[in-house]
Image (tube, rainbow, N blue to C red; front, side, top):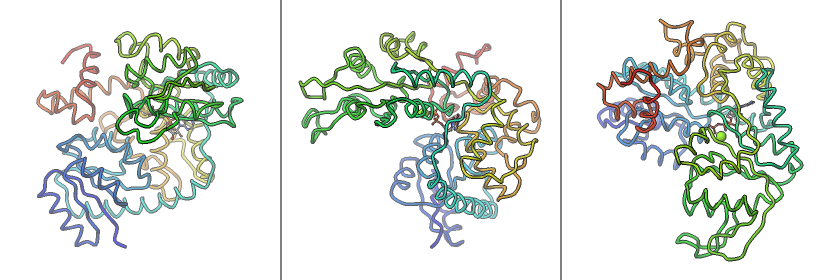
Length: 441
Ligand SMILES: Nc1ncnc2c1ncn2[C@@H]1O[C@H](COP(=O)(O)OP(=O)(O)OP(=O)(O)O)[C@@H](O)[C@H]1O
Ligand SMILES: [Mg+2]
């Protein structure tokens, strides 16, 4: 069967050129002009690779990479960036892209990259199949003082029934730790029920939580039990609690206070015995000050707080984590040089353990069974761009970010909307970041 490629680019001339070349080279090519079309294509067909331009009419392709990688763990992702966009390419690879090509794209390069990426995809698929047969990764606490404290807190949390609030940056292991606490509690044989508050809002989130009766709202075509009910006897894990909308915050506060709830559209009062664990990567205290999160709810859920520090603050755990990740995937024989560990300990890991895992996975594939060495960490090396190589890990991540933002704004001729798109963040997120700079732009 021909390998299937999804081409995403808003310039129809380029799409035509690429697809003509790739079809003649024996690929089965599908074209998308925008992110929306690309997302629909991915849902309806299985692809071996995606070639993704980043600046698209309905958003930045970089924002899609994490979801795409999660939805299709083995797919090959190649991004196309403008000349000099090394930081953006690095960010794309950090989020899960395999490779990047700079414009104008040379067709021979494209073919070579595609072949390499498809080989990577084939190996990855084989490996994922065997990984699925193995047990789930265990949470690794590590030897650093801060993580030893986290372990003590988690053990204590497992023994008690108090609501736990886990805070930490993205990829620090909040989901994993919440499951660990459940599995080490007396509720471990009862369900662990997880709901992300960042997806649905309003009635939809309420109906997920509380359930509904037929006709409670337009799309309620039959009775449905809520997750609070399903979690009876077990643990209810509310992920991204900071994203819960105000009306649901008020309703949920009542549930915690009264231990009772009603399905939407029903008068009958119900009761459920669940243990609550919440997680967020936001600073909830700050959110309460800004009026975005109810203070009374914050007090109710923040009874037993656990903060997981970013990986850059516990770099001594990197070696242990690497070993743990390798052992968990059954890669006992893989050797990693001291030089690699030194490099990994210099990198600031903005995506934390998730990023370490992804980067390690890629290095394992690139090494093709041999010893893993520094050249297999192209993303990390590029981050420590030639002029700055040895200093990147030591330099403060925020400073690095500030420099990058200033550079992108400059390249966009001072246009902050365009800069936000290029950076893959919303305009308001960009303004929040700009406010923190000592020398305003
Ligand atoms: N301490 C750890 N030990 C082993 N694996 C870990 C650890 N921390 C994180 N991971 C791995 O990193 C990835 C991200 O973990 P998890 O989803 O729990 O992070 P998170 O903090 O919930 O991230 P987000 O805020 O983006 O939802 C997972 O693949 C998980 O296996
Ligand atoms: Mg999470």
